[in-house]
Length: 243
Image 1: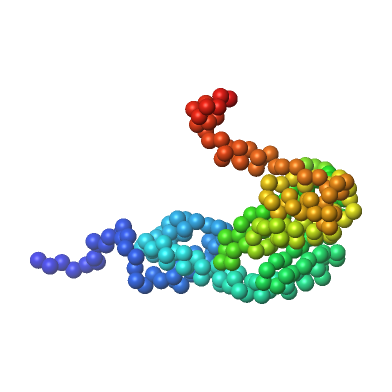
Image 2: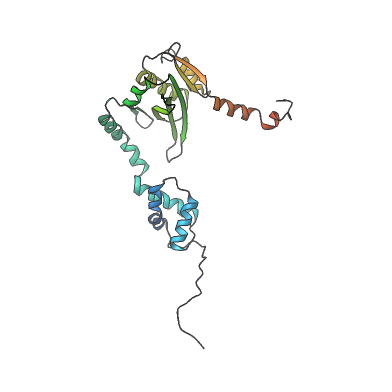
């Protein structure tokens, strides 16, 4: 005998990707998470989406949805780069003494007046380093950082360049010397063994030669290079070296 009533055999563990669960729909679900943490992982987003709709979307749809949500919040990469000169001009207007220079479509350098003033009262040490950018447009962020009287790190200058090279490091360090360290003597530059930094330190036209500047290698980079050169088996005495 046929009985009527609510259907109760729903599968609560559906795992296939639903055709209506497109990237735009996913973006509306996860946009608040992106606002709270732009670096939130895809795995966390997947858990939230499954809890919301009961389906497991493909990783591609999650990535596309994250891109759409990010664009709604921050705008596109193209818009951001177009706004960069305007942003720097506003920054200079509201921060007297702020210095920046933009080489269109290639490089940008900036430093803040409070950082320049603070460096006078910090120990004469600058840590120079670069890190790769992982957005749509590649490049390298160069930084110069000092230490204040409380042993706190104080970034004093920044640049975004096309890559680490002799030309880009020379360009950056020339501006740090002219706009941040000025005529201060005895400034110790600590860095890795990048040829661009070493070349800039030896260039008499940049003002980093003694007695204005001295170069020392970063111990962390030195240790990392040592480990990569002398593998664990050598340190254990398996390759002829006894430590």
